[in-house]
Image (cartoon, rainbow, N blue to C red; front, side, top):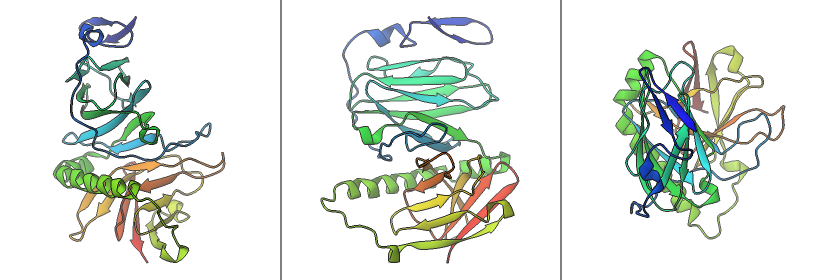
Length: 280
C-alpha cells in the first residue's frame, strides 16, 4: 500500500494509482502529443543528464510534460512544501499516479493520449498537461522546479503568456529540425559567443549559440542551477525553460541547453546573484 498523508486524514492508495477508476476500462484521450524535448543519453552517476527537465515555477503556467509509456516520471516538490490534496487527473483509466507528500510518480499505460494533472501543496499549485509517448528521444525521468523570489514570481505571472508562446515556437523549430533528412554539420565559424557580466564567481562561465540553440556552460564547482530569463527588445524578462545536458565525467561542468537564441539572457541564482549574457 502507498499512502498520501494529509492534515486531517490518511487516504490509502492501491499501488499504481490513486483512484479505483484507474484500474477499469480501456478508454483513451484522443489529443496527440504536441511537445518536443531533448534526446536520450547515458546517465553519469552523480551528474544531471538530458532526461532531467528544469522548470521556472509560475502559478499561471501549464507545464507540458511528456511521459514515456511503461516508465515513470518523477516530480519532486520543493523541500519546504507538501501535498494537502490528492493529485487530480482529468483521465484516470490510461494513467497511474503514486507517491507521497513530497514525491509524485506518473506512469502512462498507452501512447498518444493526454490528460491534465493538478498538484496542490501547502505553498503552491502546479498545473500540468501530461502527454504519453513511446519515443525514446522524448523521455523525461525527472522534472523539477526552481523558485524565483517574490519579485521574480510577480514577473513570472506577468510574462506567463509570453513564455508559453516562446516555448511553443521552440517546440515547432525542433519539430522542423527533426524532419530534415540530411542535416548539415555546424561550422565553428557560425558560433556566436556571449560576454559574461555580474558575479565574479561566474566569470569562468562560457556561453554561445549556433544559430538555432544556446548553450551555457556553468563555472567549475557551481552546484546551484539558475532561473533563466530571456531579455526581450523592451528589456522585459521572459522566463525560459532549459535542459541540463550529460556530464562527460565527474569533473565536468553542467551545460544548460536552451532551444532558441537571443542577444541577451539573464541568470538568477538564489536571491542575490545575477549574471548577464550579451552577444559579443
